[in-house]
Image (cartoon, rainbow, N blue to C red):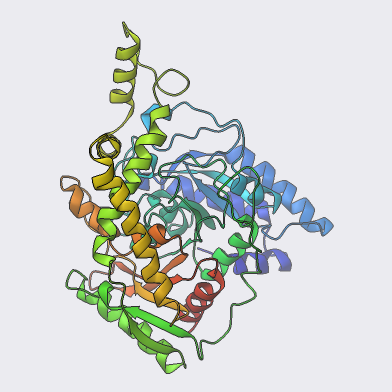
Length: 471
C-alpha cells in the first residue's frame, strides 16, 4: 500500500512510472478477486490513461493527481461503463456520461481503474446486500468490511487503488473506513457535486474519498469540490486548499466530546482507544470539553424515516418501462411493473421502499415524515449550539468493530444501529472524517470520527492529520 505522497516521490525520482504503478494495482486486483471488491475493472483503458499521464509528466504539464489510481463506487457514472448500483435492476445499464466528480478526477490526471462493489443502491451497513455477492474483510474474510462503500474501503485497504470514491448517506464512507482501518471523508452536503450520482436519499447523499491518509483525502477534495451548475444542491462557497492546513499543531484547538456518543452500547476497547487520542490532543495543547447533543437518541429513527421516504420516491423510476431490468412474458403493464421491481430489487431495497411509502402515505405523512423533518432541524440545532463553544467534535465512528458476515442480516434494527454515530452528520449536513485509531484484542481496526462545522473540512482534516502523524 502506498500513499499518494509516496507515489509522487517515486514518480519525481524516476523510480517508477504511472503505467508501472497502474500495472501493480491491476495485479493486486487480480490477486484479491476473492474479496469481491470490484464489479468491473478497466484494465486496457487504465493503461492508456497511465501512458498519457506519463507523457504529461515528462512534458511538465501533468495535473495535481498525476500518479493517483482511483476506483469508483458503482453508484457513480463513468462514461461507457456499467453503473449497476449493486442491483440486478441496473445490471446491464451503461452510463452515457461521467459524474462531475469523476470528470474532475480525470481532468486532474487521476487514472480510473474500475468500479467497486456496494450494498444495493447504497442501502446497507455491511456490503452484504449486493446482488453480486458480499465483500470480504481483508485479514478476516469471515467478517464484513462495513457498508455501503465496503468495496471502496477494501480496494484501498488491500492496495487495489490509491484512493476510492465512495458515497455517504448515513455513514457509508466513514463506517467502512472504520471497519477496514482506512481514512474516510464525508464532506459538507453541497461541497461536492452529486451530478452523475445515482440517488438513494437526495438530501443526504454526499460523495467522499477513502484513502490511506488524511492528506490523500485532502488532495482529492481539492479536485472534486466546488460549485457545479448541473447540480442545484451544489454550494457556491469558496474552495480552499485543503492540504494547506495540514502539518499544523492543535494548540488552542477547541474540541468537544459529546457525552451521548460514549454510552453503554460502545465497545469498551473502542472507548479506550478514542480516549487515548483525546488525551494526546489535550497533551498537545488542544482544549477539550464535554458537550451535549440532546437529540442524539432520535437520530436513527429520524434518519430511517426521512431516508426511506426519499428512497421510495427516487426508486420509483425503476419500473421496467424506460431502462433497467424488464421481466419477460408480462401480460399487462401492471404485471410488468410488479414483476420487474419484485425480481430486480433485493430484500433490503424492498424493505426501505415499503417503509418510505408508508411514512409518505395519507394519514401517516404528518405523524412520521413531517415530524421527522422537525426533529432533523432539532438535531442540526444541537450541532449549531455545540459549535458555538468548540471547533470540532470527536466521537467513535462505530459502536463496534467489524462483525461476522450474516450476524445481523436477520435483524434489520441491529444492522441499522451500526450507523448510530454517523447518521447525525448527514441529518445536519456537516462534514465528518473517520481515521484509524488502533485495533481491538482480535486485531480488528477501530475508527475515530471527527465532526466539523459546515464547510469547515479544513479543521477536521487538520485534526485528523495531527493524530495520524503524532502516533
